[in-house]
Image (cartoon, rainbow, N blue to C red; front, side):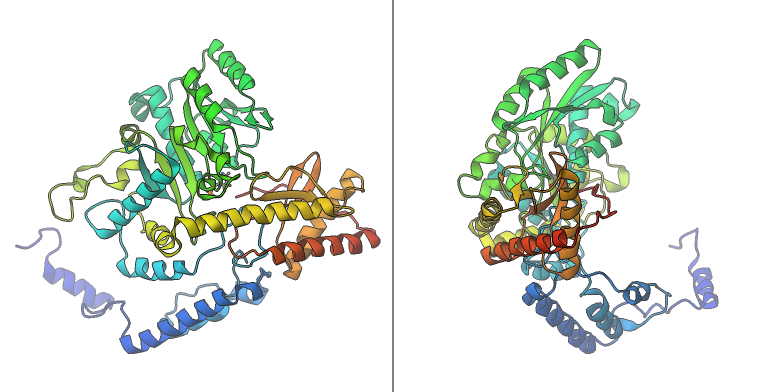
Length: 510
Ligand SMILES: *Cc1c(COP(=O)(O)O)cnc(C)c1O
């Protein structure tokens, strides 16, 4: 039967006159043998790069290379393109594959990622739903993580880009519990308030803004050594209730981004229950202390009591970017916040349209890649014990760095080393402003030299050097070499009279 909208004869004629490719042309390689050789060369180049990661710190991208990325739209074929990937793209990464990269909280990648990404690209699955293998891989990854985190079998999850996105989803489910299904139709009809420690990550603020709650309604609760001050939390909740607001969620932190602090999650869960608040935990990297040795494991005790948990696999499970998880304790609450399928997406039967539940009903993305495969491959390759040993090793490296700093003549810690972060100043004998300028200069100089990557953060009114160690390639020798380099740089710069740098210490830390 002919389609009344576009008769084949007319369609054919249009194609001919427009010079469109013939029906026998595809975008597949014209010569698969040549393509195979090209792909093998590229794979070798990638493996060479990873094998020699220690020789490749971050370096600024040359202007000629940047300019060369501009696209003209001309076709060059696979072989020429692969050669350009090797020469012009491969060498200019973030440098977070290097053993002395500790800037911000960056994961460092796994060789097993090469394996999973080849398969993911080949299968090219759309994991929004339907009935195919990658859906089951994702379910297996979520189920494994659920068990590690101690969540009940009633929990559900969905893989997303990272903790930022997972926080949006989790707090949307919390908002739905507070306001009911009406919120999906009418929007916010009440003023909601949420609570988090002062060190809460910016991702929570962005999520609160995006959900229409407004950043002013995210109350910052002072922190003690044991995390959020719970008396202050209760007082803030009572004050908001008295004003007619609806307190709906408290956000606990398992591993703060600047100091690696942990809220006392057990006590926070008690407080959340007493106040009738949804407990969301930002466990971006710190949730994975569940796999670590004592004493670090205990830092995340109580995480299993959260209503929702956001975490990353691209930091402490080290998988290539990007991959995070939104885990929600009660599946019906997760589903109710997002499920919405028009007729053309109806799931049914044993065919490809089966496979319920579909992941698109648990978040905002409809089309989704096979993110789970790199996690599944990492766990299959290294096991929980191997990954846990690397995580414990990172905490040991931070402790070693802290001890070296404390043993030195001029350096000093700016905050206690709790997990995998070490925040310190290169010369505590200088006035605060001079320390800040010196630390910024050292950070930048060591990055430019390719010696080590420290980022900076503010502590006690000083811009400090900050090492966030989520790097399975870091050895004790790397820690010692980097601290020696900081000391040498500090001596050289203070001898030279260290003019204050104009660089801005304020950065949006990932
Ligand atoms: C990195 C981080 C985030 C943001 O996660 P992304 O994966 O970058 O979106 C949130 N919270 C903490 C504590 C983090 O370290």
